[in-house]
Image 1 (spheres, helix red, strand yellow):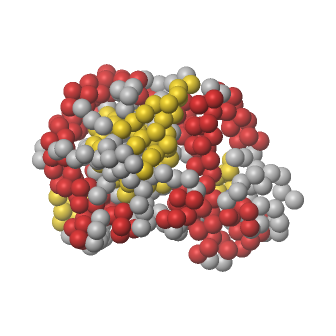
Image 2 (cartoon, rainbow, N blue to C red; image 1 turned 90 degrees about the vertical axis):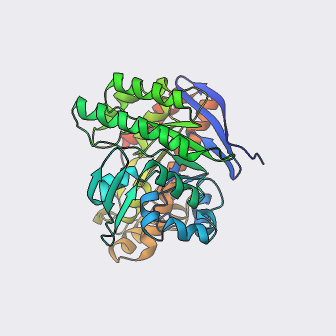
Image 3 (cartoon, rainbow, N blue to C red; image 1 turned 90 degrees about the horizontal axis):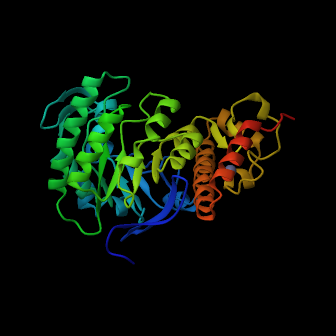
Length: 376
Ligand SMILES: [Zn+2]
C-alpha cells in the first residue's frame, strides 16, 4: 500500500473526471461521495454498514469533535479512526463553517474566531494554527484549511474582504500543517458568486500550493442555478492534476451536475439526515415514507435497489416503523439513502470511464421525471 498521498486521473468525459486518490489508509475512487460522521459516527449506521454501501471515505467535523469529546481525548485514545472503528480515509473540515452556523457570541479577528459552545456555553478559540493542531490530533487523512465562509447573498465588499482573510488564513494553515507525508492539506477557494474573486482566490491558493482544492462558499442558500453558474467556471480555475472537492453538496441532481462540471469529491448530511425524517431518495425521486399511501403497500421502496431496506422489507413496514418511532426506521432509510448515493457515484464513475456520461445523465433525469410508482 502506498505511503504517500496522490491523485491519479484515469479518464475524462467532457468536464467530468474519474480517478483514484491514493492514501496510506486506502484508495478513494472519484467522483466520491463522503457520508458525514459528524460526532464520530454516521448516525444510525455501523462503520461496516457504511463501508458496505460503497463509501471509501468519511467526513468528520472538527467543530463537534473539539467540543465533545475533544481532540486531545481522541488523540489519547489512539485517534479518530480507532476511536470510531473506521480504518479507511477520513477527511475533516476545519471547523470554520460550523462555528459560523452553530456557535454563539462569535468574534472574528485577523487571528481567528472566538465563540461559545452550543453545547455548554464554554468559550473556545479557533485559528488556522489551532484548526491544524486539532485535525492532526484527530489523525485526519485529508485536512482542510481554516477559512471563513459568508452566507449568501452578501455584497461584493463583504465577499472580497472575507475571501482575502481566508487566503491569509490558507497561508497560515499551510505553514502550521508543515510536512506530513501520507497526509494531505486542501485549500479552499472562496469568492461567492463573483468570477473575478474566484479567480483571485484560485491564484492565491495555487501560489501557496496544496494537495487538493475545494470549491467553498457554495450550498449556503444561493440555489442550484446560481451554484451551477459558479461551477461552470470555478473548477476550471483549479489545477487539473489535483482533486477538486465541492463542500456540503448535495441532492442527487446537485451531485450529478457538479460532477458534470469537473468536481471529484462531495459530502452532505442529506442522505443520513433525511433517513431519520422518513425521506428516501430513489431513482424515481423522493419518497416520503410517512405518507398514508404506503400503509398497505407490500412493494419495496425501490424494486431495483439491493440495499437491506429494499431487499428485506416492504413500504408498509417502513411506514409502520416510522410512524411507531422505532429506531430501525432511521437505520433502514439511512442505509438505503447512502446506498443510493453510492450507486449514483459508481454509475457516474463507470459512465465517465466508458465515455457515456451524457447518456447516463439523460437516463438519470428521465427516471427521476417519472416520479414515484403509482399507488396501489
Ligand atoms: Zn434500497
